[in-house]
Length: 159
Image (cartoon, rainbow, N blue to C red; front, top):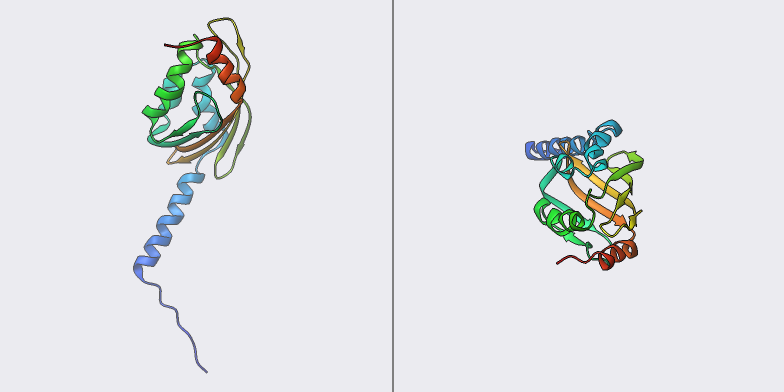
């Protein structure tokens, strides 16, 4: 009888353990925690929310509007999106969670209750798919109404 013995190198065990720890880091979030992270966005306070976003976040805003793009840092994302919105929405986007699904990632449906400088009701809906690692958002894919964002900036031009 011939037996086959598989030898696993210490390095392989270390890599498996690290991968398991990384998965645990990603999965270590709860719905209550996600609600707490997003709470600041309701009042338009981006600073409170962005304290939970990695400096090197990978953030994709889908669509064909002035805010769409692939951003590779928190600073780039804020400058290209929230800073621009702040110029046309005096009280910020005022994003409220409507639905939330948390598993190994958070899927967050948001509703904006903001009003633009010109009085336009910015009644936009968002869906953000967020990956957390060590309780910090490291990746996001965001979906929203492109036509409404385009209209917002057409009716409220920024210099």
